[in-house]
Length: 324
Image (cartoon, rainbow, N blue to C red):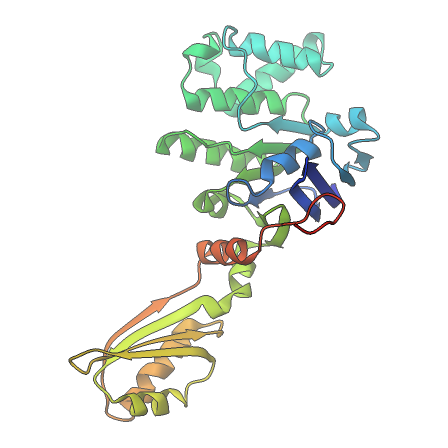
């Protein structure tokens, strides 16, 4: 459905998008995740034909966004981070303007307006001026304009920014519903939002793609982030000997305080951290030594996000490949 190949974008000497390549299949909700300044909005603006690329290609449904923009753009509905709303118009007036710009006329246009108003649930405010609407309703109007023409691909850039918790939940539910009939790409820097909505996640850092997978599989990629903490009054030599019988320990740190209580922190690459914790417990029980405390920390998407985006060094390359 969407193919991005070696996409690169410079602003002067600043490399905003760095040789980005990925493919998105039809259907489902995809998350485009990265910290502020990672290149998400630039990439989305290029994918939708709003911005030119320095090099690379983008295909939407087989049409090149640069060489055949008219056909490619008919397949796209786009909500920028700042919705392009006309505040003095009502939602109906605004949607009529957008629909006509998309080539809709007559009964088809009227049917489309009625349909998207119902989809985004703005029936009760469709006659009010947009300037009088809450931020949540303004976002709904923005999503409605993206849905006009029934595009196959819906691209939403930070759709819940500035919303209150109830509005965020409502917009999330709406996006999930859209994913049943459209391919939805959702840009966000909010981890919980991506986890709650998306079936696959692209993580971008410093303009480069650093991960692309399902949330659960992304967590498995960094199993070494699984951690076990425990305290004991056993001597350090006994602790190390007991743990020598436990498999899948990748790192071990031991500290002893002034009361001779030992604190141990170990990392494991085992998929089942709970089985490892049991092995640790029984390793000490067999030696008649007590664990005073045992705590587990399973890797979360946030851990993975921080690991990938912090370790990916920012580009320091000038246009043309010259090092700086």
